[in-house]
Image 1 (cartoon, rainbow, N blue to C red):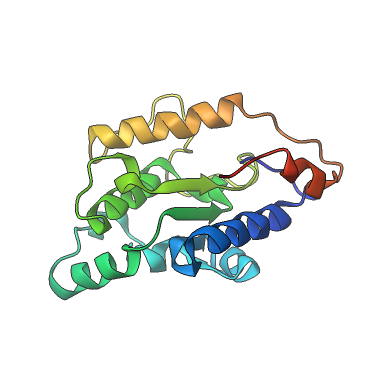
Image 2 (tube, rainbow, N blue to C red; image 1 turned 30 degrees about the vertical axis):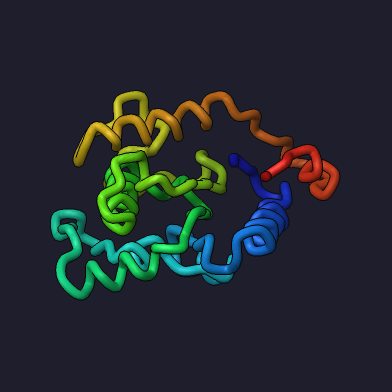
Length: 181
């Protein structure tokens, strides 16, 4: 979902998480953001802390032993991963998220381990640091063929999604037009 400032993104995030919680329980989703401030604003945590991703991508490795078991247990009930401020998440970081999701779901071969990934934000806000944006026409393929599929799905959604007007809309009536279930 693409938003520009003042369009009610926080309200939409709360409505989606409330609906997921009502239908599947509070463990069925995780709220994440690319920065600590953004994570605090939505009551979530950072992508790096949740997925055990080091700051230096050269140090990214598969989780092993107890760390792998703990992560698998943590993500076992999760069905939805909601990520805010995704403009700062680049191709490499999205690839690491994809790999970690697959690992947490016991190496499920579906993109993102079969999890539903919902990205929020304005792609034109802040670009990723030392990485290509997720809508880059030729993303790298750092980990697997799954990565390439996943990135193109995100890019396609970005390209085809209408960007809302910066004017505040009646979000409650707009949200009712979508049926999550």
